[in-house]
Image 1 (cartoon, one colour):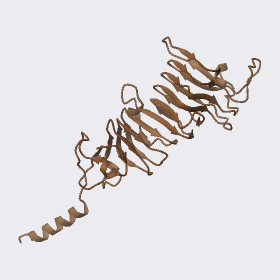
Image 2 (spheres, one colour):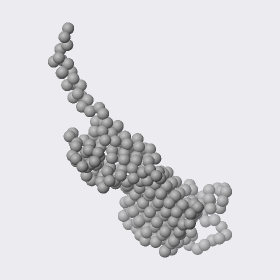
Image 3 (cartoon, rainbow, N blue to C red):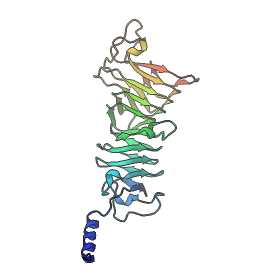
Length: 287
């Protein structure tokens, strides 16, 4: 019996209409703009040609879970809604997650900048983004201040809050494989209630501008029986230069007390490495 060609063609049309695209795509930024705007996305790897025939975004694409996303150099993309989920995210330009949450990628790669107005770095393996000799990407904390409650490892970290009096509070350990740059705002180690000792380890340089400062919360966060005296308090370890034009207060004492340990919050400043480095402070410093 000969097959019914008409029947086969109809069946094929039905299958294709139900599954128009079953392979993963890679979405590139055509221009800067909002993640949820189809007009900023293209399938052109150079990011030069308009190629988005179905007006998809990486979120509305039928294969979004397996699609890759590339934020090209010179592009600034803002995320204004929660739960972006894709395969590999590569950032060589700038990606601003604002204060949104729930984002997840299988990998986070690139040498670009990721902006955060909360403790909302997306979930995913970020080895390439945070590693020396690979992406060496930058995380920028901005806004009116926040609390960093999740232990993180980044490469470069910058703090640039809206005002010099806005406070970004570290309440979890941070490992910074590159540099820490404080442009504006108060960077505070610990709050006034947590009694958990913190470790802030910066492998590179620390730079503090005149509109920025470093302080410590008043909670009595200590280690019970440390091997060395400096391990009793929070530890701030620096492997490079420490240059400050802002106020640095690593104690809340008003006058020195050399006979007893403070119980109102303190940070031990530790320099490591085998190279000659610079410690300079042009303003008040209480260590």
